[in-house]
Amino acid sequence: MFKVIAQKREELTTQCGRAKEILEGDKADDAAKAAISPKVVEYEALAADSKAKMKALNEAVKTIKGLLEPFASSAGAPAEAAQSACIIRLTKDLELLDLPPQATISHPNPGEIVKFHITITPDIGYWKGGSFLFLFEIPPEYNFKPPKVSCITRIYHPNIDTEGHVCLNVLREDWSAAFDITACVNSLMFLFQAPNPEDPLNREAAQLMLTDERAFAQMVTRCIRQLSGRGGYY
Image 1 (cartoon, rainbow, N blue to C red):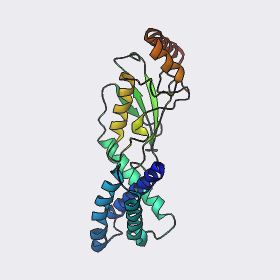
Image 2: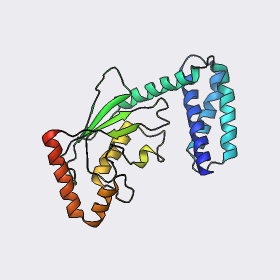
Image 3: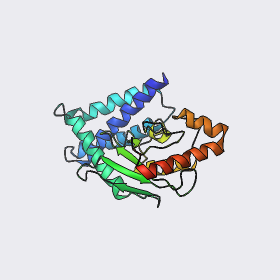
Image 4: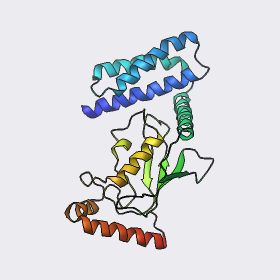
C-alpha cells in the first residue's frame, strides 16, 4: 500500500510539473492560469506530504489532469512539456551551481546539457588524495525525479559498488523537488566524509570497515595509489 501511495504522489508531482510548464508558456489564457495556478500550489504541497491519503491523491490527480486536458493537443505534448520543464530547471540549477572547492563540473559533450561529470577530490577522510569522477544523467522528469548518478572511477567504498552504483538516500526515496544539483554534490561530499557501512552496496568493504577499520583504511589507500598509477575507470 505504501508503494502505491508513493507512486500516486510521484504521478501528482509529475502532473504539477506539466502544469507549471503550461503556466510558463503562452498556451494558457488568464482564465486558465487563474484556475490552474492555485491547484499547482495546493497539489505540490499534497504530493510532498508523507501523510497524504490515497483518496486525496487520486482526486488531485484526476482534477489536475482535467485542467490540463485542453492543452494536450497531441500525443507527444505531455512528454515534450516535461522535457522542456526539465531543461528549464536544469539550466537554472547549473547557473546557480555552488560547488565546494573539492568539486568541479565538466561537460564531455557541451551540446548535451543533461549529461555531465562531477569530479570530487576529498581533502579529509579515508579517500583524501584521491580524485573520483561521477556521471550525472538527468531524466526528462527532473526535478521531480532525481538525477541518475554513477561513479566512473573505481573506488573501495561501502556505499559504492564495483559497478559504480551509488547508495545515497537523496538520490532515491528521500529525493524532493526542492533539491537541486548542488544538493546532490553536497550529499556525495558527505558520503566521503561519513560513509555508512550499515547501508552498504559493497558488503565486503562495509564488513571490513566495521570489523577492522585500520585494515579498511589501508585498503582504501592502496586502491587510490594503484589507480593513480594506471587510471581506474569502470
